[in-house]
Image 1 (spheres, each protein chain N blue to C red):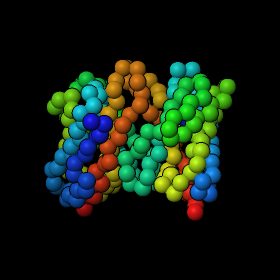
Image 2 (cartoon, rainbow over the protein chains, first blue to last red; image 1 turned 60 degrees about the horizontal axis):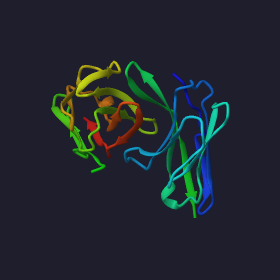
Image 3 (cartoon, each protein chain N blue to C red; image 1 turned 45 degrees about the vertical axis):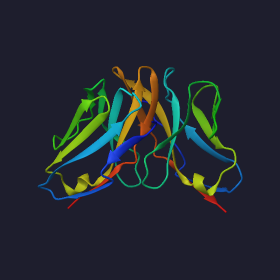
Length: 112
Length: 113
């Protein structure tokens, strides 16, 4: 299974862009990159996912390098409510099922 | 309805008790998951049900017994647990087919005394 590597913690000033990096150098061609976040002791919340192309939704943007070995999650205007643990995940087949292979997460602190 | 609900929110049980955790969804999703999460760690997959059939058991001890009585409900029956089983238990659902996105419930915080 592909694995992901993330910095354990990051800080960001409120109103600025938060750029969270992730390495997934062993990712296979049919494995998606997913990002979830988890605010303290709540259930993880889906943010965005992608395969090859850059993706954007109302929450964030996902930039995937051309070789697919790394990606960056961008929160364009971070707020205090974005303080959370952000997980970079690779989806993987397990027989007929999909499994999410979780990284250890980046704890993002958004400061006033 | 886009929610996954879990009950109870908190549960304290002794090592000889039998209890159950419940997960419910009305999104028409046909894949349902149980995860265990210890403090400061990512969620760890326990079981996957696909179309109400158990499809993945990640070598979970038999003191955890999952059940999927219908497409909207997922239970986790607990018996003779150990203190190290104390954790946040998360349920997630997925549309099934080629879609990977999982939607999580708020979790049940379990404490085993």
